[in-house]
Image 1 (spheres, rainbow, N blue to C red):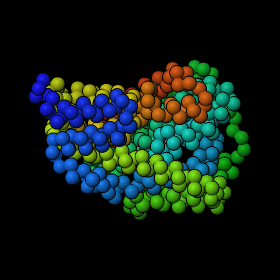
Image 2: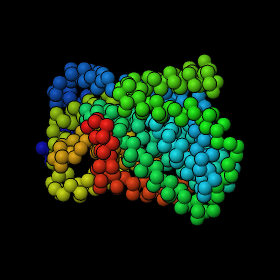
Image 3: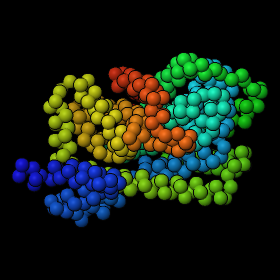
Image 4: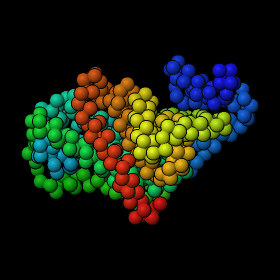
Length: 430
């Protein structure tokens, strides 16, 4: 026991968990733990400021504030409303058409927003009242919006992918391309779940109103958003960071001159929100990087990965344990925090089993998306609850079937890595 009490690896975990128990924000808990261990065990406390700055002084991270700003601009520009109207016209007449449209709109919005809770806020105020108006159960409608909004971090461009790339040094463009097919797969499984529920509950579709061409013309600028962002990246026209900047100017042009929704007041509100959100994420990245450095220096990473592989040398068993751990972690903390705590610990395991880090990152991100709908944290559900005015406990029974279908899709991604890897390989990004 005395050996344990002087072990810096033990205190790296114990102090962090103690601060979390005291309800310290995770970023501050990681930073304070790293600073204390570095000072007390003389690991080089004078290096901490340089480490803090180096963690955020990475070119790929420039895409984070740009994509946050772009997502906010797109929301205020009226683009979500046009997407909803167009998708509803296309498939709204089928059984559960409006609910299925919600999943598809969330998928398209994921190529614009990159944030699950932001997608719930943007789409919830539009889609939940519309579903209720045509006799969908309000709790079911809220659950569909909340769960499908998790696709925003699976479908590129995704802030989670950028964070993962900064930790593992994988190509941002490569992991963006890798996320497309798994994201569509999860969306397809959610559509099946929604259709089955709608069929059993008798949620009918709505007749189409108006002609296709006017609806399409009104939505064309909204539909071009993901095409410009992703097409530009994979066509080699610009980098992910440049794509985010292009998305900002495109959104401003559409919002000001075409849909006429962006005013100076709206622009300032968006700028303030994007700045504060970026600051929170960057503090997390900086403190998470310090914690990872200390964990590596004191040997914690090697011990954890060694203990994991000592349980079993069967890659399927180890992969199952990792997925269960990430799902449980998603119940109590946010996605970016999970990356900075667990990914450094799991990188030796990836190397041992020769797992492709791009595939692993997509799989981990799907876990995080599911975690955003899993209480007690359930960021998406909290936003959905706020938008609809329903308590979370009323949403959970409707969330469970959707969550099970999302887990089934994730299982396919785990078992068949080529689902994730064939597109980036085809594009020459791996």
